Amino acid sequence: MNVMRISAALLLVVSCGAGLAQDGGQPQLKIDSANRTLTVSANDSVSIEPEIAVLHIGFETTPSDAKSAYAEGSRVSNAIRAALKQAGVADDAIRSESQFLAPDYTMPKQHKFKLQQQWTVRVEPARAAEILDVAVTNGANNTGAIDWTVKDEKALEGQALEKAAGRVRENAATLARGMGVKLGALLYVSNQVSGVARPMPMVRAFAAKAADQSAPLAISPEKVERDATVYAVFAIE
Image 1 (cartoon, one colour):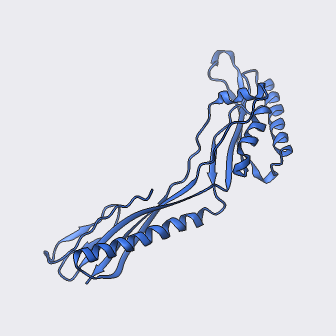
Image 2: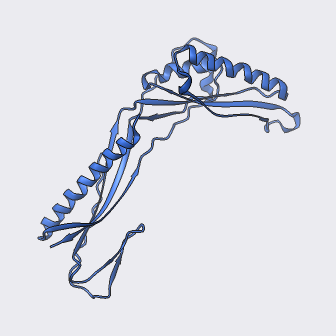
């Protein structure tokens, strides 16, 4: 849904010493009879189906002494990695995020340790559920968040900016006609792009899948959206 916000000001004959300060660090505009301007801001967005699913896959061992936790973590780590490669995931699509052996602070008096490791795995959206299932079946128990993205994020941002810029000019022309004035040259323009998708974590009970042969989760990809706002100042005649 497009969201539009318009603010317009016809700056006609007022005191020569007055000034207008725009919010958000916008420039100072002098207001006098020779400075007739119209300001407009508009928002528009673009959303498309994702081209890449970035899976967050990880595990942690049960609390034990440091040597045992490391040995168990090494076994699980290699099992998950091998299973991903066997499932057809390329080496360069698997990237380590973190790995550390640390005390288990839930049992401080027992001097227990846990090994934790996390990867990001980039796959086609259609394979997201399958690859998560492979990871969990092979020991991933801290897994499930997904980032949905596209191959060229800059191009998507550019499309959103282009739509917002076109809407700004259309709105400015409409306002000028409504006010009975002629739209003049563009004096100032600024923009802002947002809308990066955030991963939605799943519960760690998801790891219970490793104990049975149930089907993978039903996962529906989220559309990738970029939102752009353009602010412009036009002269009026």
